[in-house]
Image (cartoon, rainbow, N blue to C red; front, top):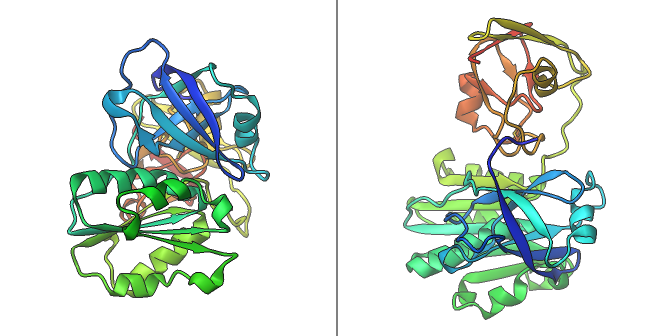
Length: 323
Ligand code: FES
């Protein structure tokens, strides 16, 4: 589905990183180095059942020798994680995209990293990178239980282990994460990074807002779209007007804008199809989008100058798109 160029990789290792978490080490199928990337990057993997899913790179081998990803089994998902756990074998060749980084580290006097569950994957890469650069950071890692915390042992053995604090739901006596307290203790040149379930991200972002942190210092990445509340009036139909092609494309109440575009023969980039990755973002010239993604920033939403056709809709009868 995604038109992004693909790379062929071979599965070098498949192992359990925690209960219900699978780790894959991927190497180039032809022996050439894999593309360089920075902490926070993710790749799309085409799974054996044809689904395309995004996974953060939690480790990158020296000189592009390998990528490592971790995949949580999600019984409530659409089948991607179950397929990965069940069907991927050591030695298989998989198609992946080049890495993209929508969650990069920025220069800061101090970085505070928050991971909830499988959200540790980009956060681990960030911690390794910050440590290698000799930069100031701390990591707060929340999980249901120690045996469900992927990379816990690696973090406990890391040279920066003293900068890592664990919080387990089944061991409250060891302390609960007090995000407001953590943030209140930091000064104005610190940045925070959070990845995890939507509720966890909301909790951290609320704490940051409450502590007076500006949006520019708060960075987050969802690994699954939060469950969207059904709009009270359901999905309305609307029309996409493609300015450069001179096309008018109706979007029915029972289809996404992306589906309508593809059905009309208009190629668009698609990847997550959940409003997470930003692959599909289109520029809007007129009209008011109804944003249902978690990718666009508040400033981008307020500008009304772009929208994600995989999940977002329109508040006006038409959207004029620069396409
Ligand atoms: S395809 Fe990922 S945000 Fe639309």
